[in-house]
Length: 190
Image (cartoon, rainbow, N blue to C red; front, side, top):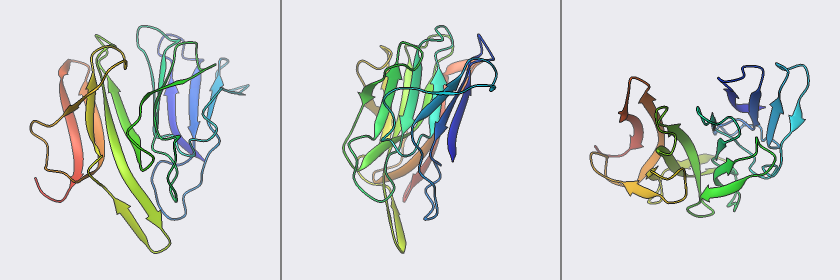
């Protein structure tokens, strides 16, 4: 099953595919990490280090450096997992470092990178848990975070957002005006 796909805009024959569906239904299929092709899909290789993430919801390739890749992992559907978070590779997917991690109940649902300055990036965290006859989406550790140093440090954003608890949040930046961020937030109140 596939959760995310990214095409390298500097070399369109390079494509990354994140396995594991990212819409958390009770019949969702898990994945086994990230795959990469450099020949337009004729041959695929598995990249290193993300086998235990189970679900990948977003992949972003740095628009100015194709070797830098960001991968959002919401994590396991049915249990806690230390493999949730936001991962970064600086070697084209050979190795990954976890650059944003909240806790074992909270993964990263979405990411957005400023195309004019890729050091500025946003990530939405999502606390969730599927049970046999219920789904709990949201919690106090869900939120939106911003980094201005390519993921070395993060600050949680609060101005203009609903009160917590929050659920899953989708993010978007307009290439024509990347200083504005659009967020669709699952919340009880506005």
